[in-house]
Image 1 (cartoon, rainbow, N blue to C red):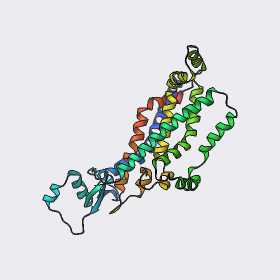
Image 2 (spheres, one colour):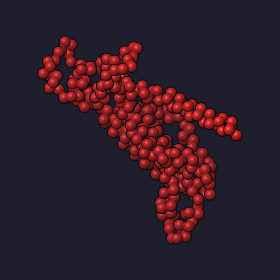
Image 3 (cartoon, rainbow, N blue to C red):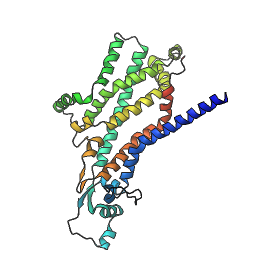
Image 4 (cartoon, one colour):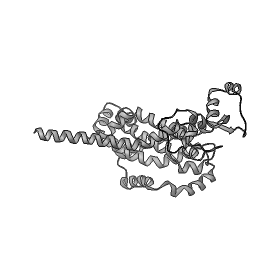
Length: 314
């Protein structure tokens, strides 16, 4: 018995060690991006790279601003440098540039937030209602309908880019928030229906029957009985839908140019006056990770519960 316990204990520690190793390997790209975002401009392209350097927030300032290089031979006096604002001084020392205005990143960032949040709310609402209908009512041709809904998810979005572009140009939805919200909702609602139907199927019907015996209407039963018990599934679905919408590139790149352009379509094509600014790109990537990371952390309890949901059946 002692040997069996030792073997189990050894396997347990080996599994933990393997998971730690896999996690570290998967986090290397993130560490590299964060590290690059804090490197001074002159050291980003150095080879071999220095392990120890003086961190700078110049990349974060550059991604939020538009700049111009001082004419060759321009040398500012110490008084002129001291008169600069602190962030202007950092950029000047890093790249010899002058900040001329606020950049486009804040607008693109706000576009991403608006489109992703509204898409998530609409998708989860429609998905919850549809999933409840399929779960609780007899629908003629239910299997075919569910397969048809799922088949929209199987279609690679790139295949329909040209038809969608032509259609949107005709109806005037190109470069608009509404256009991307409708498109993202159409592609994500099938995922929401299938995931939420599985969660609602696990909720005992007896709860609803007891509520209706007490005088609740069907809508009140759905709102006061089903929804509170579906929070785990709704939260998990919302996280994935938000991430899908937040990261989407192809449609955002082809259907937007200025008004509704999102960060994924804008960030890779920002050439600075000194060439491609890898530091600013890394800083923008780090900023881009924050909303999805915050949402995942806030809903992590529901995500963990969602993994084991349905393990105990009625």
